[in-house]
Image (cartoon, rainbow, N blue to C red; front, top):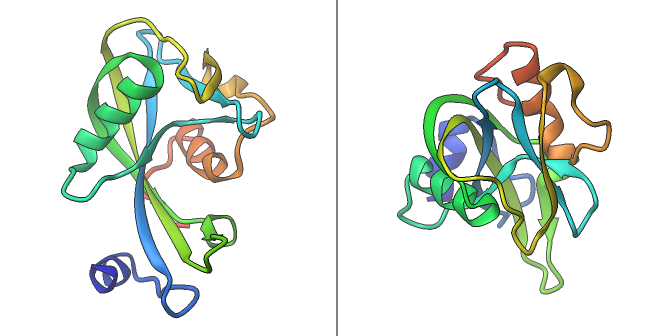
Amino acid sequence: MNQTVQSMFGKKAAVAGTEILLGVGVVVLNESGWMLLEKRKDCGLWGLLGGKIEPGESIADAAVREVREESGLTIEIVRLIGVYSELAERIVTFDNGDVRHRIDIIVEAKIISGKPACSQESERLEFFEAASLPAEICPPAKAPLEDYANGRSGMIR
């Protein structure tokens, strides 16, 4: 699978033996077009809802699951925004020596039902206009949010 992912995105693993993980980030929009961001307890920074795509799970299924788990909302995917890989920030080395590189697929979604409610991992959930995003954004979310706010899509970084 690593070979397929590497050739699909034209990237080589940064370190021999690096495992490549796929994640999904979701730009959840309310009826006014404002984005829902999550302030995480573990780092105190704002970011997109989302997480790891489980083996055998589609991008859409992962996005719907992650948003439901993190906010209680039911969503519908609208479109693909892009694929992001910040090499310097996405390489994670674990205590046991395992090295993982994460590639995030970013999608846009609209809310079908529910009201936002914080998960155990969230300090706060809040809607923001694209032009008024908070300054304290988690580094992996900066590029997708910047691209989205400026009408760009399909970027691979």
